[in-house]
Length: 481
Image (cartoon, rainbow, N blue to C red; front, side, top):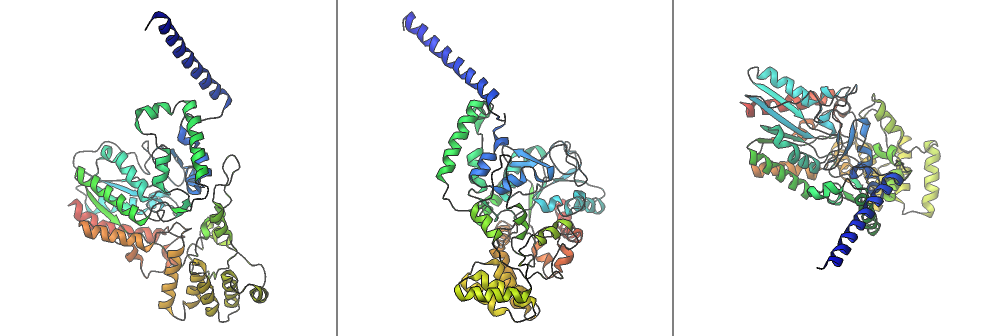
């Protein structure tokens, strides 16, 4: 290479670097971009209609975005409900593991975090630690509560992989699954991770460049346009849930710690999906609707419910009462509503919604309504509301039939953060196949009055948390000894 060519190369490289520097400075001045790419996930949430990601990013003010786990508890956050330590765990500061200390790491969602209680410290996780202190006075037992509201089994798996080695647990305890089958948008948790992760040191360095962020935003925007006709998907499928359990089990085996899995209890009498109607109009900071049109339409459809308040949990809870109020109200007398439904059915006899609403109006009048709900279910076999109403009507007449209908309604309710039977069954099979201890919390709650043991669609009352703690302590004591 002669001297002229060498000078040209040096000039070209210098000019290119100078141009990049100028462009970087211009973007920093002219464009409102965050240094952390994942704190700008609003565009991804909007494009893929990830309404839960939008909701949980700042849930109750105690969460913040996280590059690997989507969100986490804010370190050093304190409120009347919760205190978070410097590492982002609910409860007192987690220090270095001490000699002779038995450490339990709890992976979970909003239930073990204590949502629905007055204070997070009332949760069964903290109760378990207290009970173990009484039962094992000569052994220091510490429970680290890594639970985060909204977490799926996939997030808990990733969380363990990120923090587990540092914490050195002797036992990993899991209580998750309510968020797994829920419909979030057009991406599963794993797909979202693949879209947003910053793998390798080079990408993490580039993430601080506004040019990189700008170009990556354009690429993701183009990708999202290609998924405009995609279908809604659960955050974690049943098969993926088993993969997550397998990964957690493998991690525990690698470091030589025990693993215990809990099934999850939820009420059957909770009306399908209504708790998220209040979020159906959620907007981001740019005024854009996050929830997908088809999901929003399902939540806002004018399907009447047989709301028997004597059966429903959470009557004294202000938030739950607000949720009940958000359910569809006809606004007319039952007789007027029934008359209008009959008139409309003459023109559209194939409308499952009208048959359902006619049944509710007749039920409110104290008249026979079973056949109306049967007709609604025949026309729309996937209607969780029609199955729920049929179950409520049958409850006093035929409890066995009612139980089957209410469980069917819960299984069909994919717009609610409630675990499905297939996930709990998967936990049982996994523990059986791998010789692991199983705390069958679902079975523990079977037959108990739901108004006493549940606050809402999935969160237990204080009595429920006490019940879980009492069940777990007997099993954990055997492992510690």
